[in-house]
Length: 499
Ligand code: GLN
Image (cartoon, rainbow, N blue to C red; front, side, top):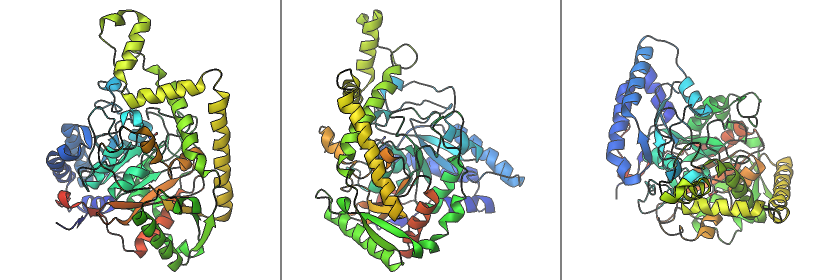
């Protein structure tokens, strides 16, 4: 078997573009050739517009030649999850319901990418309306894990992860409601950041569960994550939950990993001792803890007594919000409308449209949410879940009074086989055991690669920080990668060099 080869980071590509070592057109042409070669095997990108990418590349090249000032992401191709609205092309959410939907506006994060001169390279595959953990519920079919094509790349932002892991783009955007950036990052050997709720505007992010949704970043290195976060974070008056706080200079904070000596790292006992945790993941996490100890960090055991309720709480709140958010797809305003004869009567049309337009997992969530919100059950389920959510947040507050970050596994297991869990929703929901807490509490969290299982599958470690603690989170993550001299790798089958 070929050994995995090194991959060029976004930061390195940016330097090559600025120094003139490569032109932006050459870069985009070589990435397009890779898409041609590899995308059909991983099904990561679901739409791409080569002409507009090349036109943008030429415009960047002209600016570079004229020595005009350019944004931090100048000329960098970035793929975006297909639940982020783009004026260009379709925004499908992986659903029949929006298969032909063209957004009249760009999402805030897309505007930001343009503002920083990135090239929005294509839209990526996802679980339908971001509901899932394996990118198998997409109308485009499953995305495949570049490390093993028979396995899922996780989800719901699986396409965004696979596109970066296979080297089609150096970074991508995903969204994370309960783990949809961190879990695919762990499965595909990438860094994946879910920012603080409200740090990045949700304007133009198609809503799944509005109190949990946030857009974030996939990349090979923490430096690259910082660079993209820097570009997309910040206040946006169009999202009333978007935070007004100033955006720190994440890119220079990342280099500040020396502060690790005075850091307190909390280890959540419930997670390390979890009986469902794969032994090779446990081993890698314990090794990472040793590494931090060697770096001078203080390790503190943390008890999160309500963590056992995270999954139950999340799977009430998320479907409740989803059932309300998805009520807008009625065949009247936009999107799919049933063509069946009985759909000539309004009520039947709406019913038929929603039955045909949504796939089984989305229908399941709408039913669950509608049930939990119905009169008579509302207090027992939804209100109770909100109360427990408060207690979970309290666990985090108490933990962060004692430590700077929390450390643990991102997922209970490595990437599983396509088809293995799709008919067992509970098994899929349990995949989110370690990730949903950060969404319920609104705190930032990152998954970083820390090794491989005996079968050669990537393993991720999760670090979580207090609200708006991204700078510290990134610095502590970087300290680990610096110490172990982490080198991002391309999976064996996707080895062609970037330039
Ligand atoms: N797997 C979780 C769910 O299905 C998380 C999804 C997400 O973060 N978008 O709800």
